[in-house]
Length: 288
Image 1: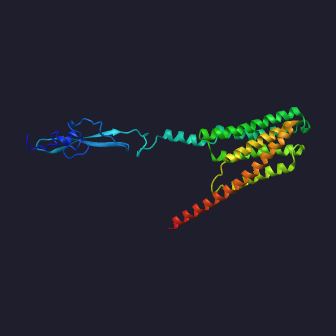
Image 2: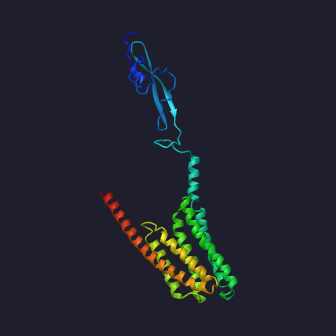
Image 3: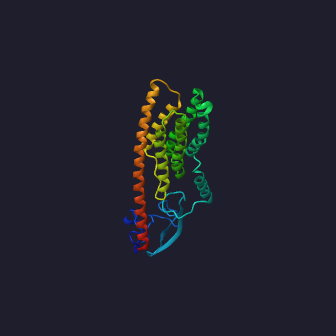
């Protein structure tokens, strides 16, 4: 047959997947009206024309083939999620604060008045009531370890948790220290140093919150653990070598309390400087 180009007759160009009759994307031997699996797209739907060869070497456009792409697929999809998915996402965001980690934090706050009542029952020196108080204090300390682990493992970290968690720690720890000092079991200067540091760092967090949130560090968690062990040993009516051991455990807790407090001050200064620099750069960029 003469007058028909090689590419249109299924020549080398068509055999290699090249353009047929000058139309990109058409495969060799395509029959008009037959969809091609090779035609696809990434933006919601893809369109391609299948060309047909007509006598004399002319090319006539074939029917349009439409291939639907799932709207859930990642990529440049310009399709919008269904209303049901938007409602589900909004519900998750609204309930995110009420996760298990934050509920454990709230539990520690609820335990504070009960702990004080047990600590001061029957004059405050009854071994049985002090044992119950120690149990309530231990539950609060254990929940402190679990809520942080759950928040990091299951991505439940929220700004509420970052702020409420240290407040709950200070509440139960402060109640225990004040009760012990009021009962004469712990020197007041220890209570003042620990509570002064805790309240000061909590205030510092709020002062720099406009620039960001200072998360609890590993040193801070170690400090909390040492304080919990030391205070727990003082809550129990210990005698003998255990009474001597609790003094040294408390000494370690005081040292960690002061050291981590200084580190938080350093973090707050750095965070404030970074925040001021970022705001200044944003203003300069807006004015430019």
